[in-house]
Image 1 (cartoon, rainbow, N blue to C red):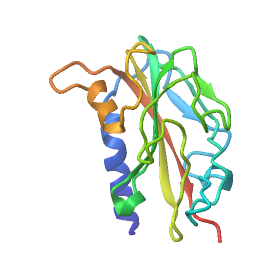
Image 2 (cartoon, rainbow, N blue to C red):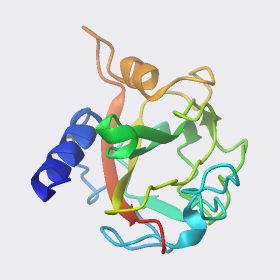
Image 3 (cartoon, helix red, strand yellow):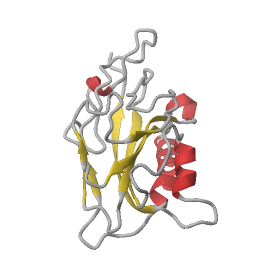
Image 4 (cartoon, rainbow, N blue to C red):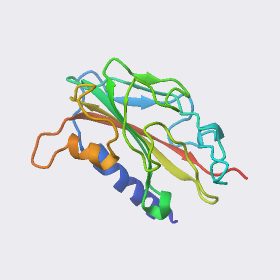
Length: 195
């Protein structure tokens, strides 16, 4: 896949999510970081999914550590979306859909969301689960995994569990309605199947 095509896919994948809220925060930039990997760098093998029936799932499914700060005023809850825009031949794979994260929660420890937890409402990933599902990257070029944190004005328990990414975004920005997004931030981790 050409670098131009990869960049185009990344921009297209992130544009909808990042465009839902362009509000700047008065107290500084809304940011997300990870101690597990640096933005734009390779993620460690342990974050990849584990599945003996899929030779591309070569990790331990340990969710990366994530911290976010400087949420916009009016934030009542957060959502996190993780996507591989290059997965499924360019159709994309939604690895994690989480929302209803209380405004008081501003981080997840490494491995904390590798299974269901009461700190968020689990949506439905492409794999059909409501918790972190790590990369199963095929051999070849690295895939880009986007982690987007969205600040919302939804109460933490307002939305039902099991929403897909598309269903969540439709509720976040209803057609003809007011956006519930207050702001968003993201980072990208790369993963390639080790030799």
